[in-house]
Length: 173
Image (cartoon, rainbow, N blue to C red):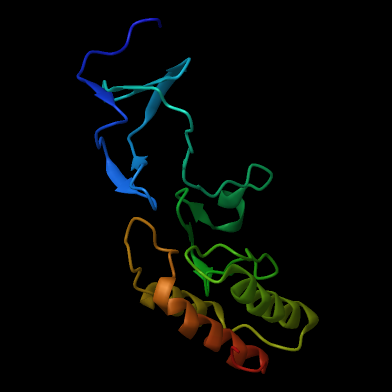
């Protein structure tokens, strides 16, 4: 573990990845193999010297170790749960809801509208459509990015407006 993997040595003084930051001194790098002192060894064989700060952006995958999803008819790919009506309600067990799954959103606003809808459904104020209708809506949703189908980005506005209509809530501010 004391020897770096084979490969060219790179120094922070020259760009070694995508450059960001006000001073162009933040670099996006590959997977980290290990740290030794102020050296950083990457999986691709690069060694970086004189590193003062590393920010690990490891991503996010859905995980529900306390819940047997196969028992409720939901598949978890790590990046997506399906089928869920409106990316929210478990279709086979509609009293089970997953609030806050979409990413690249206005989290508090979207979650607030989702919570309103779930609360109204559970209280009997709003009704979910029949199973066939819920599945049809699920099948119609075209993901913006196939590998990350719950990235809402621009479609979050329409989604929140749909939730507002379903709950009789005011439209977004």
